[in-house]
Amino acid sequence: HCKLIVTLLTASICLSINWHHGYAWQINDFTVDIRVHSDSHITVTERITVDFGYERRHGIYRVIPYKYQRSADMLLGKGGMRLSYNLRIKVRSVTDALGNGRPYRVRRWGGNINIRIGHPKRYVSGVQVYVITYDVWRALNKFPDHVELYWNATGNEWSAYIYSATARVRLPLAVNPLNTQTVAATFYTGPYGSRTRLGTMHRTSEYIVFKTSNLPPQSGLTIVVGFPANAVVFPSRARELLWMLQDNWRWLMPFMLPLIALGMMLTLWYAYGRDPLRHLPIMVQYEPPEGLSPAEVGTLIDESADVSDIVATVVDLAVRGYLKIRELPSAKFLFFTERDYEFVLLKDYERAFARWRAWKGVKRKRSDTTESKNEGNSSDEWDMLAEHEYLFLHGMFGASVD
Image 1 (cartoon, helix red, strand yellow):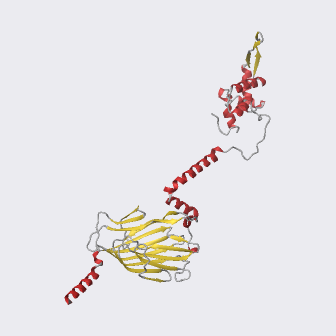
Image 2 (tube, one colour):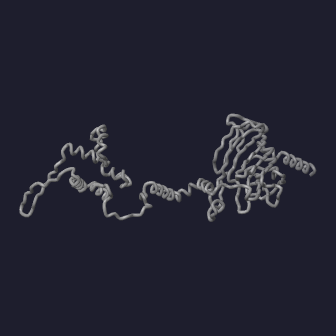
Image 3 (cartoon, rainbow, N blue to C red):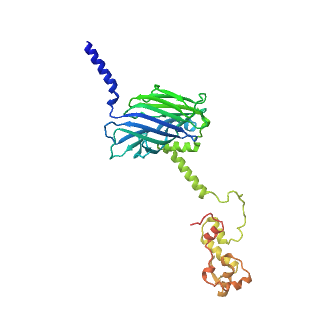
């Protein structure tokens, strides 16, 4: 019996000593510095000391969750539904202990930021230090009377044992970490959802420091710090709304399409569909606008140049003396009379004078005759504008009529 007891004790001691070394690699130390800025974003610097032993590896993966679910009242002040809430994370640098850059690649997959650190064709072994710095927006939770930082400092995605973990939180300059009346703090250790607190916490004039040790795989250190709401300035409601639309566009799109179509139609109406001069009162006119010919008035009424408008032009030219209309002798058959008319044009010099006098509707004086000698008498100078174009240029139509 004594030999059996000694054997069991020896085996238990050996197992307790070598249990942690059963993992292929381990994290000797995981130190996180979190700085809260006055514009409500945080800067995180992680110093991860890894021991690969004799095993040759390319590097490590750092997995940071960024996709969460939040109630709508935390986003827009309206409850009753849950929306996607995505953190905005930007990796600034990945270096070694001396500040030399390490190769890395960032990918988003499964609601996580996956940072692959290391060269795919190179191997490392032994103790390696990885320093990761990144900025995070939307990490702070806003409440009516305070602001809360709820942050998993180490992450729970590690397959290695973490011997020591430390998180230091530096608040904005306006906040005193030593004031326990305005600054509250706590922490949790273990797997996801754990409320266990195995570790220590203390405050300094600059930091709130959390420490724990011996974290098994899939376990981490989560810190919680609350401080006055006036210490930071959050993004505007417009920015929050834009982020919310970006995070939830897949299922919001069916509801947004009618609004987008309405906005486009309102834009088109505002640019092209409004009535011109809508601010002026509508007055009834019993006489045609001054300066318009009968053909122009007819075109303005029905927006079409008809045969009647052409006839009106002929009569108007006769009234103004530009041509003569002569009724020819008619033939009678019983009670019916057949009438015909003859148009007598002006002589050449009379037509030239008429064109000069009415050229593009410009009134001229006798003193202008001297200048006209140098202008030439080509037919282009005497062309009249077409009726539609004339009315359009004089503001009678909002656009040219086809």
